[in-house]
Length: 297
Length: 132
Image (cartoon, each protein chain N blue to C red):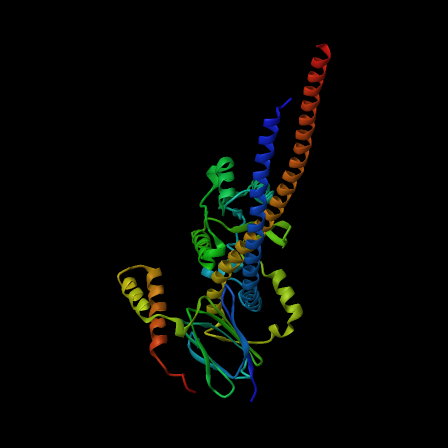
C-alpha cells in the first residue's frame, strides 16, 4: 500500500499536468480562431480562381508544356503522394490518421504496380515515413509555419512539385490532408492535385452562376492566360490545404487537451479519495494501538 | 451615373470590395480602363498600379500589384493579385536598395523580382492617371 506521501506527490503531479493541458487547450482555441479566419480570408481567391479555370479548361484539349498540369502526361505509372501533417504532436489522432491513410494509399498503389514517391509536409509525417519508407522520400518540408509566413511557404512547395513534374519524375500527385469540418472533427481527404481535376468544381460553379459560361474576350489569349493560371492554381490549392490542415491541427489539439484535462480531473478525484481513506485507516490504526496499550496497563 | 462592383483579392485576404465609378488595371498588353457596363474580358496582369476612382472621377485608392488576373463583366470587376500593397505605403529608399541588390544577382528568379521592384519604383514616381 502506497504511503500518504506517495499519494500526495502523485496528486500534485497530476494537478500540474492538468494545468498544462488546460493552458494548451486555451492556446489552441485562440490559435484555432485565428487560423480559421485566415482560411476564410483565403477562400474568395481560390473560389474565383477555380471559376476562371473552369471556364478556360474547355479550351485546352491537349498541349505541351505548362498545359500538362491540366491534361496530364498521358501516363499513369509514377505517383507522388504528399501527406500534410502537423509539426507538433499532442493533438490526438490528427497526425497518426494522416500517416495511416497515406501508408495504406501507398501500399494499394504499389499493389497495382505503380511507382510511388512520398513528399511529406510537416515533421510528424516526415519522421514517420523516414522510419518506414525511407527510400521513397524525394523531398520533405518541415516548419512551414503557414499561419505566419502564409503564401510564400505554399509557393516553395508548389515550385518544387512543378519542378519535379516537368522533369517527368511523376505523372500524378495526390495530397492527403485533414479537411477541417468543424472545431472538433477533421476528415482525412485525398485530393488529386496534378493533373488538375476540374470536373466536379466546374459543375458546382456553373450551377449557381450560369453567366460564367458566357463568352469572354481574352487578353492576350486563352492559352497565355491558362499558362499563367495553372501554376498559380497549384500554389493556391496547396495554400488552401495547408491552411485547412493548420486549422484542423488546432481543433484536434483543443479537443485532445480538453479530454486530457477532464481525465486529469477524474484522476485527481479518485486519488484524493484514496488519500483520505488511507489517512483515515492510519488514524484508526493508531487509535487502536493507543487504546489497546492503555488497556493492558 | 452608374457604378461597377470591384473586388481586389489577394491569396491572403479580400483587400478591396466596393461599388466604384472607374478602375484602371495594368493588363498584360496595356492598361485597361473599366467603366460600368464594360464588355466581358479576362486578362492577365503585369506588375503595376490598380487605380480606383469614385463616380465623380476622384481617385479613391491606388494599389500596387505584382501580377495576377482580372475578370470583367458589365456589373462586376474582379482582380486576383499575387501581392497587393497600397502605393502610399511603398518605401522608395527600401525599393532602391532592393533593386541595387538584385542587379548584382544573376538567374531567373532575381530577374523577375527585379522587374517587379522596378515596376514598384515606377508606381511611386509616376503620377499620370492621378486625375482623369
